[in-house]
Image (cartoon, rainbow, N blue to C red):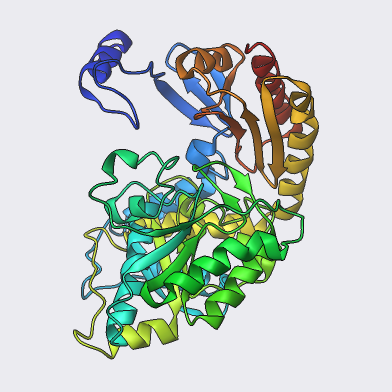
Length: 428
């Protein structure tokens, strides 16, 4: 067993963390244990987690019911291939997801991560139009400010400027982009608001396979909350132009916005839906792409008669068992009240930031709180300031945001928001 100095030295020399340089790596902080909403570092310091491990650990850490679900499954078997075999955890989870999502979504495809779920959705749309003998439909329409993942296809539908992937612009498929809606959540969508989207469909609808967007909340591309009325108008325009609508609920699914799925704010039903992140409560990587029977039948009835995708760890029994336990735990809790209380605490705790000259905007929706600065933060120094304050917060760019576990109590939430407010107040 390495001592902590050797561990960190090896990490710096050999382990490539997300969006970091191997020559000048950012500091990393070794975790020795995690329980509830607290991370315990190797040096004994405890941090209240404001990120829910990139929005996935909605029940916190080391939850006894989730732990038991994995123990029960691993005593049976940890993995079997999903090609030609099936198992109860995958079937029961599939039934649960089909029961919870909008009724027309009846066909479900498992994958390993959110990015792959988006790739699957894109391939479903492309193969759908191939089956209908409209092979010219190869493009996707997406919103600026959007983020859908880091794999090659998913990168192509992220914002080409702010989506962190402009370095690869010469090799990515060329997609159609529309300015993000300016109408905020809770506001109506005017004709002027929807006009750019409508014009893009009018111009490009014959080459489009689908529209893909994050419903209500744009996540890592800008943490922007937009009008539910806009989403409803998008659905109507897709129907008018006979276009598929893909909703990426990877960040918003399972209660984060105050509804089980963000599309419920607009009473919109997609043709394809992507799920991930909180699906397993942060225990294992798993994602799902759901579609209508019309889409799956159209693909299945045309050459080659099968959907052309198949991950090695598709439907992993451990991940499926964790997901089923996590969803049951969520549904059996008073999660709507919990989210409402977190929203109230975020609004109160972050309100003072709106008075700071260095702050451009403060916005809160459900269990998401965002402080948008006028200048990008210096990651190394601000992370250390948060740790000194006893919290784990991971900003990016100009955005300092909180997405805590749903089990956080008001005292810990107050500590989080106070740390954010005090740290931001000291930025010049």
